[in-house]
Image (cartoon, rainbow, N blue to C red; front, side):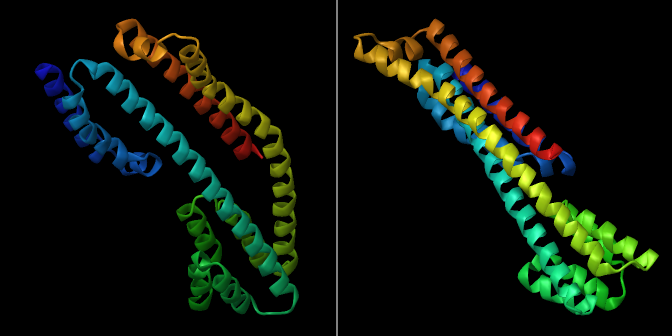
Length: 256
């Protein structure tokens, strides 16, 4: 057991150093802090586990995978909230411009409603490149990618002399239409997500039924090598299925 704990400690230290020294781009896309600290935090559990080292490792891995799925879902929800704010911003900006307000005043007004675009209003005031500032804001805030469409409309209107109000209004109408399509897609995907969660929860129901019938499934899963293998394989398949469904849904959301 001491050798196993020492190996786990070495692995934890290696993972922590590896993640802390990862490239910035990788750390920006990965929940790297929990990945670095989870093995270290699990060491006390490993020391106390004794002969049950394998079930503890399986439980820690399943908990981390579930946490990662939850974080991905929260991130998607946050991105959708930002996308809705961008759509509302485009509608407000189009309304301000069609009402005859100067572009600088219109940008200042929408910046009050959504502060992340305040740099765009500042760029207009100092004569900087407004489209590039829109694109910079879109890059910094996940879910704000539609600001690139607004940047393109602003740039086209500036170079061609076309009415800025009409260009921004077309972008706003396109975002509204895209949002309708996205809602339809989300409705179609809701049943698939619900089915995946139901299938992932069926093992718990099977465990309850087995226990009620006089069996001892928990003792088998946590007390025998064959049970450990079944537990690890079942959790891996269930979590992989949930992850796969979420990946497909995210791909569809990105395509729409």
